[in-house]
Image (cartoon, rainbow over all chains, first blue to last red; front, side, top):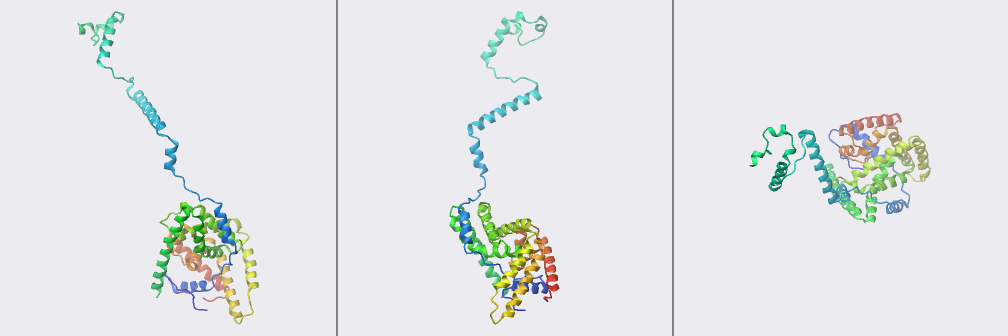
Length: 135
Length: 202
């Protein structure tokens, strides 16, 4: 057997039999047939007509797909719906809106002026809308 | 001596890896022609590996397939990895696809190709016997390799012939390093047995 024509770089745990087998394989390694003369040109021509597959830029797509205005409108709708659902589910009360002092007084006066239309039984008990409270 | 050579080859490999990554970067910037440098650097290794894994039939097509796949997937190549390891992975995938498509035809083609090699020989030289014995042994190694399963063959070819580390092979084939060791052990045992059955004393 001929001397191996390569410089071995073996792991420490490789035993002598493996070393001999590797040497034999290296010496008698099957040699690939030469490439056809125009192979490189063929590969390069193929590449020229093939684009590199670029991975999708998800961040940029998200910004493009959802403009800011639509995003904020959507967020407002979602918030409103969430509030309504929360109220319906847990409080069972209609949504209260803020009323300023002037409106409160106006409302009370209107109630007083129409008091005669209300039920007797209801007015017998204390009410913030009772006449006595405003005399 | 061995350690000096090893260190030198490691340094060369590291600097090649860096320049490979630079060339990949240039390709990604649109310099298509730069890819020819990557092709020239690696085509022989790719070709040799494919030949030992799949035989000589349609070898040019397989090599072309590897480089086209590499080109298409260049943007997915992580610059932290080694380009050669990544290319070996593609080579392995191409070999697996080939096995699926042509498993039945393979042995027939190899026999035909071996005959062609013998016919092409120039037997007029003085060392005719030596040449013949070389061809005989090469043929035995080739047949011995084809006798192994693709899983065993690929580990043996990459480790013992292409001199890749077990860690690199584990990365390429995507298996644990323990499996690489185990496959290597069984592949060597099977190949040794085959060669002994053919009258080769190692």
